[in-house]
Amino acid sequence: MSNTTLSETDSDSPRGQENHFTTRIGWLRAAVLGANDGIVSTASLIIGVAAAGTDQNEILLAGLAGLVAGAMSMAAGEYVSVSSQSDSEKADLAREKLELESDPEFEHNELAEIYIERGLDAELASQVATQLMEKDALGTHAREELGISEITQAKPVQAGLTSAAAFSAGAALPILPVIFAPVDQIIAITTITSIAALAILGALSAKTGGSSVVKAVARVTIWGILAMAATALVGHLFGAAVG
Figure 1 (cartoon, rainbow, N blue to C red):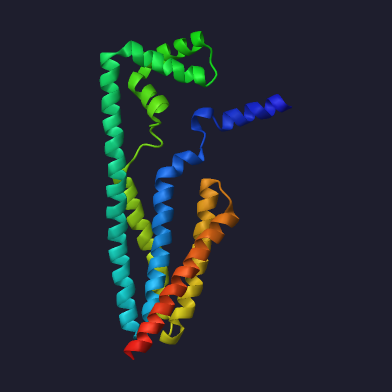
Figure 2 (figure 1 turned 60 degrees about the vertical axis):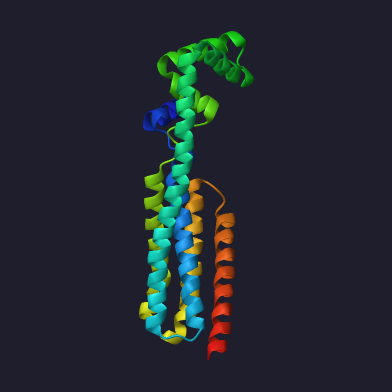
């Protein structure tokens, strides 16, 4: 019975097609960060401006300006940051390629030592290093020595676009109450919808990444509440002072 089950499982989900959470690291990080920042920063901005006693059009303008500025800032920041990582990876790969060309024997021994430290005996480690280097020397050393693989390799454009799109989607949620809610209910409705959106985002990111849902939801909602409370207080104080 167990053999049949294993066979069926293997045929339905071949090992080459397994899905692991690490394959989602690049886009998941950028998407979660962008959407979370979009909700928190835009909701906080709207609540702060509304608490100052401004009219509905001014609140909406502030929210839209925050969406555009935030999306561009997220895209640029993420692109620059990940580009720096990508440049470092390319420099390391170029140096590793040069070392492989100038002293392949040393690089072979270095790779074999890595496998020995992982538990292989010296003879087997040498055989493994030889076979892997014959197939793809640079790729093997990038993965084993530098920790660079196709999954973890930096992708600046993908990260920048994902961050901008996610921020815009997140920022749109707090703007909707400004358009449809009465001006005296904007703060309450924006706060409730934003906290709910943060909770959903935390749960989805935890499910997608295979981590604890409770911790993720608590983390994003608590910080979101603190940010909105702080801007509401600032807006109220400055509004009262100006008034």
